[in-house]
Length: 251
Image (cartoon, rainbow, N blue to C red; front, side, top):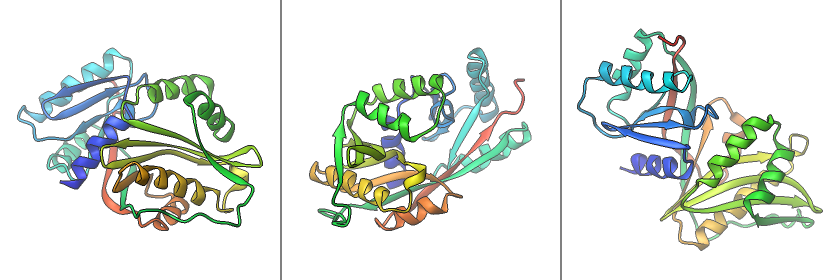
């Protein structure tokens, strides 16, 4: 199943600081940085009673002083039943997110109009400095963000797009066997709609294609129409979607 293969690659490509497998569910912990890296995802069929498993997960997150968050992928047979059970336990719905994928051609063309711009692969340290200049976040979150990036095991790309030596866009790519994931795609807020995001993604997909990738994927919140329009240029279409259920009380 393509959906599950993409999900496995995504779990490997954006690693939590700790991951626990529990009867087909994947529990992730990353000190609260992002819902995705601090949630429970049902990936494979399970056998234990769902209510018993939910209580077990709640206890594990309570020990870390975090709310329990479930991430429910549409391809999971358990997702709908689990969604109803979590709603009964007063878990709130949050962030319908699309997982888009596209087959990769041999090469994407670049825009000659952007003659002074340059795509570069950087070290993690150099990339993270650029990312902080393009994305507003507090220092504590950035420390956890960098810790996650350091844990990436598959082949990674820390890409930066420059305009006259100034970073204008950046992103992270992770290649696992034949599948390439795109993460943290950011363009400077004052420089959007100028083609930099398109050129950044073109360079990243070309990098992956040259290394044997035949499919790329990414995740985008359903309400982000600007991003959906950008990714459609590269043939990205929905493979599946997921949503979160977030615990409202620690009980």
